[in-house]
Image 1 (cartoon, rainbow, N blue to C red):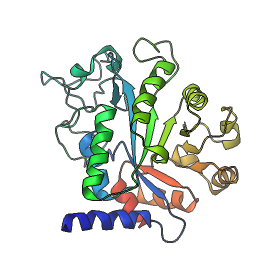
Image 2: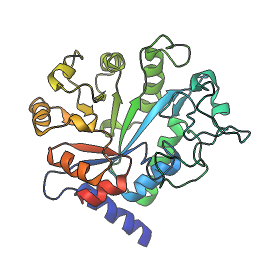
Image 3: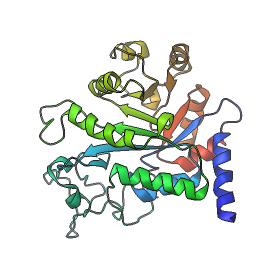
Length: 295
């Protein structure tokens, strides 16, 4: 009972975030990669316990058509260990998920290796989970702990290149597989699907117009009006790299009914600047910092 009270109190504090301004949706990037192994069940559990509003994670496809939670379409040398205990190294050929059945993918550990990028990340044995299993876990855990209203911001990581359909899936196959899983979970308006790939966003919008979509953009794209002209429709969200965010482009989006959710905002001074631009949400590898700064 005491633990449940603590979790609920944290959640309430997060929902009431940024008392000096409007409420801001606090999103755990890959479940909070600075704290726990990215895109894993332990990371999502930790983010829920911290009291974030939204779990952000990425999707890939296995060789047997399973939707896998993973940022990279291969086993990255930053964090992956083979089933035989050998480390995946930078100069070795990439081991693509799309060339492997999921039962092979699940034998690789992605949580025990120290990660230079996130030195404070807790080390725990973990695997790349199926999206279906991860969502089932988070929904069950939220019900158990009394945490209500958790949202999902889920990225389909398609990208046009000559290796599409070989090392990773063709974007329509990819979207179909992902949407089948996501829609089966009946998340309703708690689900946002994001992508850097305008093709995928156009495809999903045409086939499932009821789904809330977010257009991810890199730091080299700064003109929001030009960015939105890349789509034939107005998405619910714009998700830019955080350094390009200004009060002016946030206001431009709000005038057109577009919410703004910058990525990936990790330093307290950057969190404050982005918050004060009037954004609707913030994605961070350090959800604990988001909560501390915005509470």
